[in-house]
Image (cartoon, rainbow, N blue to C red; front, side, top):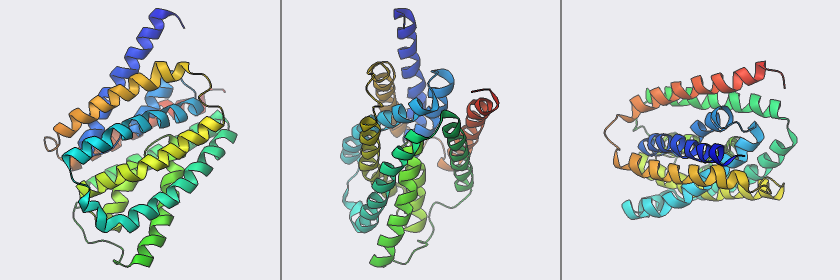
Length: 273
């Protein structure tokens, strides 16, 4: 890659990631779902490369966000939900490992189809969630056995989504904690970071064991500038919380996610491979 092109690529990776990070910070999410269409459509990576690069950026973002959130908010409110959190981690870690192994055996065409489907589902879920009340009684009774079993089951789904999309999974984890276990939005956001860290780490390590990061250039040219931009954006977004209603934001971002996923991945499905 020529020096001028390389600088342009790194600048683009950084500039795209900042507004994505801002939007993620506003919602208490990482925004990784919105990076996928950028990685494939604008930065020109294959679906396979986009997944593990996105996962690496997610790891950087989460690692930076946990101490910041811990300084701003106490981890104490998470303690009553610890059985759910640990169960979600247990399930998610299992399928994060398995999902990365499955993804390595699929063709780019198959991965693009899976990514398109999952992004449309997540976008639709965000739109539906925007119309739901933020405070509702927990759907599950506060019983240890039920929480552990449900946590593992939900965790299996979360880990699979994480490893197949290269995301932290906050878009799935936070609604699960709020609606299934009755956590408030701030506690759910903090818990989601704690759940995402081991999940994403396992995914990164599994992809690394498959040789995903042997070529260091994408890490230097994309992961580092995107990671820096995502952290800056997330911090800015966190400072702007409350300016835009969360429900309106989810409605808009769910719609944007579906449109961008269809534009990038549906067109790739129609083009010859």
